[in-house]
Length: 358
Image 1 (tube, one colour):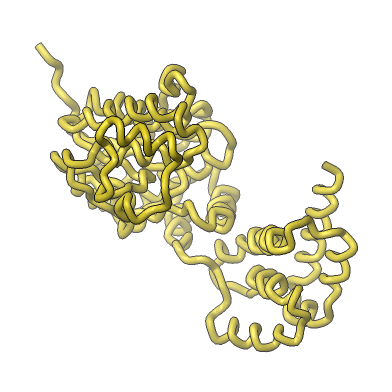
Image 2 (tube, helix red, strand yellow):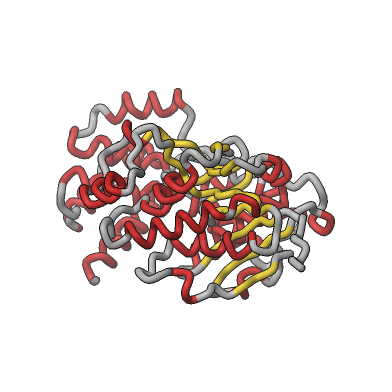
């Protein structure tokens, strides 16, 4: 006689490797709890975390699990583990949503689970048809053609969120098979896992998105990680305190930039600077604004580091210490950076020195 399935919706995380992924997961879980329509102790969903470092979650109401070594498959493809973990949960529970660590909630998780229904695949975002996207590697195209899977109307998915009912878990088995087949043919295809999921669901399940409920910060990751690191530094000892829950809501989904009128004024003033340095100076100033939100303030270093990265990409070579010292000595930069100038200068020179030592 088959055992009864657990009807309580499951929120699932997979977090392994560097500490930043664990901290992202902790914050995402805290955001789910902060937005929950019910109190933490009486919520309508359960949280499971598959991790190699369960200590991070000791102060959270979650169940932790070890990651099964075979989930990486024959090619040890780490994104395959997402589908294997969710498939494992759906063997015991009627409904589950796996969410990437680089996410946080905009609304109650209850609203998210309402979108997980039979015959549907919940994903973070629904992308353009395959025929409108950049071409896949030739080997992948050949494989898809040979198997009859190459369909230009295939809608791609962002799998920062994957939600299914147990009745539709066969889609995961199919996507895992596709990953195992395609991985040797397209080892550099970063979106293979998402493509496999879209292929498995195409023609079988309708797609539901949830960008209005979940912010997935795969873009501009450094700035959002800076916000989350600041929250973690402040609240890691008591992530469920009233203050921690209130601060979760202050970590917004906006990039911290000066107001448009002020940016326009800065753009006009910095037009006096040599063209080679102009964009670099403007990007540095994003980190020098006096933001009212303490978590926006925490992005200063991320802005300064990004300014260096962007400059070196434009130049096609690293910035020398001589040029860095000279450019940071610009009187107009000193004036516009104000009280942030000394901190910015010390950070950038230290960063450059560390790179040179390595």
